[in-house]
Image (cartoon, rainbow, N blue to C red; front, side, top):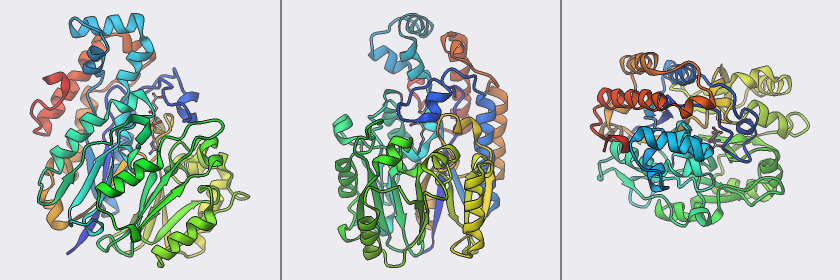
Length: 435
Ligand code: SUG
């Protein structure tokens, strides 16, 4: 059976803005209050999807969530018409309103953890939406994410959909951003690598070990093919709020910073034991500092196996602009190892909130039969991506400031856009605001 990796990117929503909501995410804090450009953001995201498709790769997307999330505001005691809810929240709780306006579902690496069918005990592909308990604005994504995943991967013959983990931060789970898979080819049984954190001196850890263990149990993974590794506090405190800021795995390659793991020697030994084929490519700290990693998002790249078997690194422009990082990337390529192609893409609007190319996608490895069972509206071709670009051009603003969130007209525009999207994608009355 032939398997392919599908990247499901988050379609960036019309309320994309910079509200400084994520403690421990340095870009989010630095850009708090800046003007955003949702139209540019969404088009940059779609251009990245086009670049992957041009490489001959399979590309899907997850739709944005409805924001402002009035259901949450109502649950928190704001009442009246939709307009009144926005006005009251803007007046008394502007920060809460900003949380309910976040377009953060764009970072679909945090949507869920996915185990492809070759790795699971029952031969189905398993999905667990992340509870994202560490940040309020993200925790309100989990319900709709579960609905989206069930909508796209609904066939129970092929797909097992789990609820997000209970217990809030006790089982804090951030999805695939702290999870990787090593394999000899996508369709062979792989080794699943879960990275968890322990609170640093400066920043809290979002992913708990017990959460990763629970996901592994639910996904019926083979313990002999599963590795749990602690992230280093140095990386966390430097701003690696998710492990995918300091490392990425694809196929047989683990590409990471020397200071990613708390005990790299022990971690590499276990990984090599369980995945003897692994090729570990490490960036030494004396070549690329953790600070350069966080600024450039070198490891928040997409490491992609191309149809001809080559491996490409899709990096953000910020990596090309950082001399130490660029030199390291050039050297990695010149060494003639498994990574042999580099593409730099501009996703600056997302980067300013701490989300690089890898944050913007959820990897789902599917057999041809599984792909045929998935909802075709969410798997892209040239025509569908052009339709999404047209939708963005028609509905999105090119400038949003914190003050715009107070204006009920912005809410109306966002809901009109989402309404049009549900029509385009045949989703029916899918979102909470349509109930
Ligand atoms: O959860 N930023 C996101 C970025 C997520 C990046 N994802 C991965 N590394 N996989 C976060 O911190 C900022 C929103 C704001 O501040 O307006 C935000 O949610």
